[in-house]
Length: 246
Ligand SMILES: [Zn+2]
Image 1 (cartoon, rainbow, N blue to C red):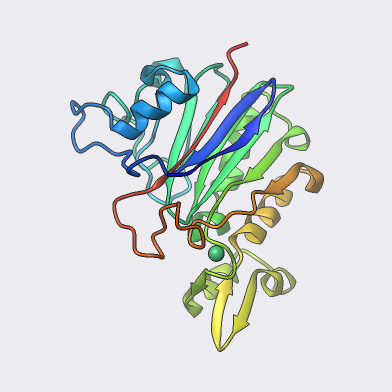
Image 2 (spheres, protein in one colour):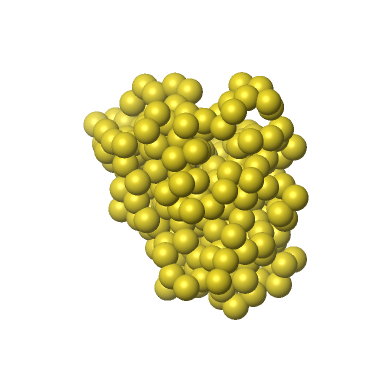
């Protein structure tokens, strides 16, 4: 079990954890909350009815959520289907997403009082998810230049060996100079830096370079996290983020 703090200040708090079992998904809408969610709720002092988890689909959809969504996917049916990004201006409402090597992206705009949390797989990292997340925050009054962005723990560029088809896909989204920075070849194998891909995507949205940071942890290297690449199936880590109540 591992739990790290990603952000903790007078505006927001957020973290990343494997939980005890890595089980965040229930099979049926009437099933009880998973032990991991119950433990998280106690630890951060927020009731389960104020925590939200969408059904993720490694796509580009972002949902703006309010208090009425509280408990979705945690203690009640999940209306948030095929959603990989959550945005809110509601205080004390916990956004959460599951990830096992994919990238959790934490977004905070304290002046506007808006946050966002994105689940970026390789496809979304090169796709529209970062753009849609920032756009949804802008609708709530956020300015890109004021957004602080933190790239959470995910599979690192040393571990993330990929096939040529991914570079072909990335060539549609990035120019040659960018592709050179994103990909590395070692022993005839191709590796991708999702960190760099998201840094470029964030800057393209108007987020300032000095407001972008990355947590130097790898879900594949670190055996205390769950990792799809290392063979974990059906168990994940959880990323969460909320605006403080006071
Ligand atoms: Zn690694």
